[in-house]
Image (cartoon, rainbow over all chains, first blue to last red; front, side):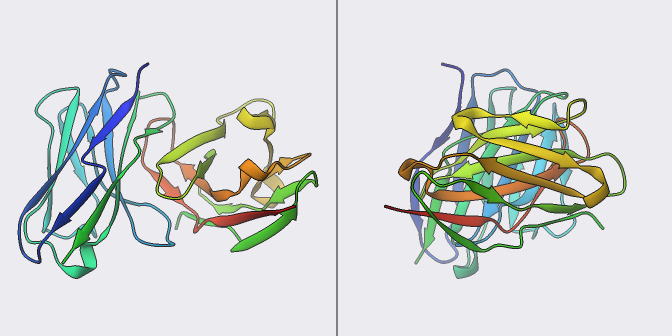
Length: 111
Length: 113
């Protein structure tokens, strides 16, 4: 089945230790998104790629970076995680004219 | 500014009873509207969407929603709730298909037996 896959599902890191979250898709969608969802809150868009064009939300901290080496994969890099970065990170994909499909998420814990 | 309001933080419904979850939006143009459901620890699953056309849209799992432009609302309904419907429900608005979404804060649905 075509889908959005996120690895790992659970990630534990130490304060200040860089971490990378992975998203892959078999849908061949040209748009990929990263959302941050803190406990009991709505998902908040961090950035998205339209093909290779990177679009950063104005209030996304510099601590968050992203890479999209090809259509199928997109990575979220957190350079120096703080306690406030503990959250569920959701990857989503869409065609330019379609709705977003979400992956299962990666829950990040920062110790 | 674009925004989505879900007035009800938590709703409890008896199994078999009908359900309506409210969603109001603020948007400068014709919105693209979505309802997603999220079970604990899981990602978001699309229930239904409205892009244009018929203002009453049918979705998966027996859900439907009605777009009312005059009221800036997109309320979600289900005639008979099942225990498995207990989850978090998010309403979202986008500028167009394939653009970033703005989510409401969500409504937690509990189902009592």
